[in-house]
Image 1 (cartoon, helix red, strand yellow):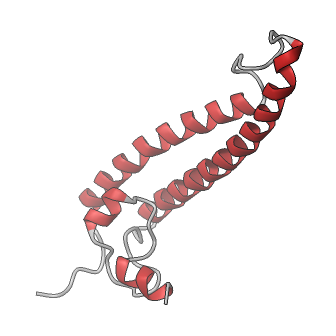
Image 2 (cartoon, rainbow, N blue to C red; image 1 turned 180 degrees about the horizontal axis):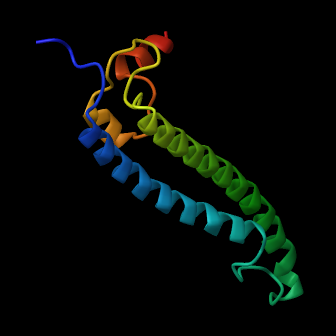
Length: 126
């Protein structure tokens, strides 16, 4: 029997459902991070006594930097998921960009935006 070169339409729809669910959660998380960065989450130091305000403002600056990094990572994740949807529509989803072989379904279920097989990923680290 010939080696499978792409996932079936039914399998692609299964992956689409997984990705859409993850995309929905990722967008909500990203929106929460943006709200936090804009100070719209009600978590500021306006009602704090002046003695502690300086300490809280310093911690808030550090927290804002961490939140910015989290938001950037979340946005990159969203973009990766959106690119995976495009690959599903093009019927190229699940094909390793290095080896041209199918990425195992187990890997795609765990990391639905993956574009490399474990083999290719490990070869790239050497």
